[in-house]
Image (cartoon, rainbow over all chains, first blue to last red; front, side, top):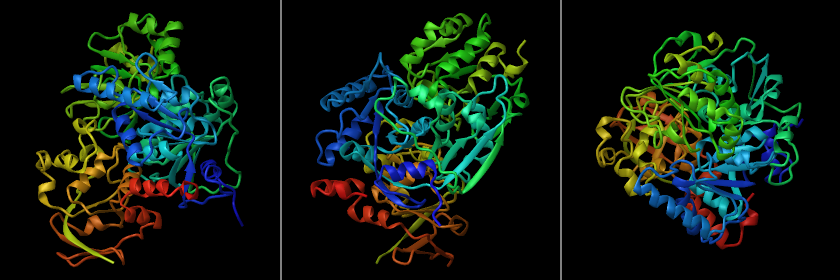
Length: 423
Length: 178
């Protein structure tokens, strides 16, 4: 009476030498790539040595990225980064993305083809769930798990229960994948029923999303408390990976008779631009309900919404316009590739001419430890992924989370603005 | 077979990893003694001084849902709690990222439904690790924890994942990991 398996179950089975797995089962799997980045990297390599191992299991499959504290804002971090570089070089790491070739780690992992469908990739930062966009299992781990994987190419997992989100309906103008993420956040709540679960996104509306939107959707599954988020590979995936994937791959998809703990139908026909109110990710509202509220800082970037599609959306809205004098707008492309392509297409020119500040790729203001930290009394409109008190710096700042479309439209007027209302 | 006894701190609200290890310590080394100096500083102003939480001498933490959530994956959270003398955390559910770290460090994060409703900060709890029963010695209430997975016990018995894997590597048994 065996049922079929979900995509996540299949990936865990395939990578642990099993014919099948069931939720709850503990397995050790092969790991295709392991990522570690600047502020935790040196400790990860130290732990590698503590295991009695001198070299990484595969120099091509340990991906090192400088992204949180680059370029270094203090002497202490400059020294830390130099120690990090030394350690990376000592281990002969093939793929090291440092200043000048840098990007946010999760963007780099997918964009540079280090994640392959049907495989498992882990990283020492919570938004590793992003990797699910190409039909892989992407998971965040601490430095211990990363060091173990760097030593032996394996990680342990408890196979998660799977939950399906079947999404139908046409995407409305100015509505982005971010709005769907926030909508689901509101449906399910931040502390809710999705802890440890594998979230599978499918249906025509998901198939209609480009890779950028799929990355946004998978990215924020960690903030739902889920184990991973995943979109089965299809023609969009194949086209994206053409000439990009660093390795051969075969697609893995869910069986028609796979078992899901829950299945949700989501119709996005009436989904409009959405905003998460300060302090709580699941306190969401349609933009028209909060339109007119003043803010003074606008931030677009991060592994959630720092891609070409996001730059293009903002350029479309801000072309020929001026950002309100009371608004400080900071835009940070998620990688040098995004930065370069945005330049070539004239998006950055439009943004600068409109009065936005552009910064070099990094996590920037998102976690409140680098460029664009929030101060007392700041009201931030952010396209990032978290808005709890103190997230971007001061505990006396307020963060509204939304899409790049809403941020750009609002920046023109200095108050939260529905992009559908733009003249 | 062992019984662990001690004072409990009960979370009144949702406790995030961001409150357990506040931002200015994210880039510090992972070290139980150092991390314990400021652990829980964001949870209560009373803990926002050096060893503010550690000095209270709690043995257990009891919480409701998604303990240590908010998405932070850093291990300082677990190291700090262990350095502060915490022997186990009982809750309805745990945030996935820190649950994993707890397993790797051998700090018991044990599922126990509704335990937060039956405890108050300062109560004395007694945990029988063989039966999984937690007794609140102060008010007499008894709670049954969900059994811990064999793998979790194995890792804890080895002294944490590092020790577990180090031995596997040294004994040439990596191929046996399944």
